[in-house]
Amino acid sequence: MQRIAVFPGSFDPFTIGHEMIVRRALDLFDKIIIGIGINPEKQSFFPLEVRKRWIERIFENEPKIQVETYQMLTVDFCRKVGAKYILRGLRTSADFEYERLVGQINRQLGNHDIETVYLLTLPEHTFISSTMVREIIRFKGDVSKFVPKIIADDIKNNYLN
Ligand code: ADP
Image 1 (cartoon, helix red, strand yellow):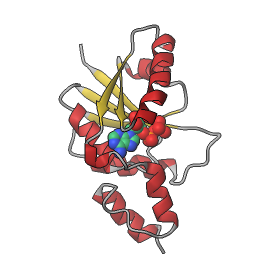
Image 2 (cartoon, helix red, strand yellow):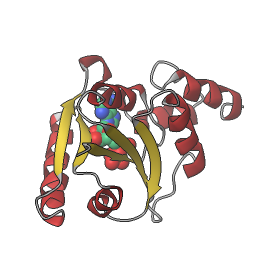
Image 3 (cartoon, protein in one colour):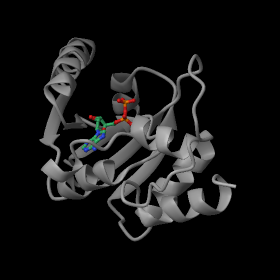
């Protein structure tokens, strides 16, 4: 049976922290579906299609990775795509408390057959967040050290003018 994991998030935008979690998890799973959750209540900074295209381009040579969008509970999305695992990254103790809550709820909602797998962030990526990247862009700063090159180039050309 294929080991399929969903890596859920808003990825607004995808950072090198996210990228490293996915690359490190590649050995653990046969397939990783990066699931961009749509929250109609929340206005995103980057359009959904742009976020999706960026991630697709980053992993275009990686056949084990697929990028999808979804608007439902993460466990329902997992069932839809046949995933038994949810992949998450852990940066800080604050992340841990939040992830503990979501992980335990998802375990109940998933009838105990969906496991969440957590990878600790590399120490040098602990301070990187999509929120911080958005703040830097708002004030026209340079985010090239925090996001993959494809995204940094596109932001420089299309969002900093
Ligand atoms: P959400 O909106 O669900 O918090 P994010 O897009 O912010 O989604 O993050 C998705 C996942 O990536 C989460 O598990 C988060 O902890 C993890 N993550 C975010 N930033 C980093 C980072 N710098 N290093 C490793 N993991 C990260």
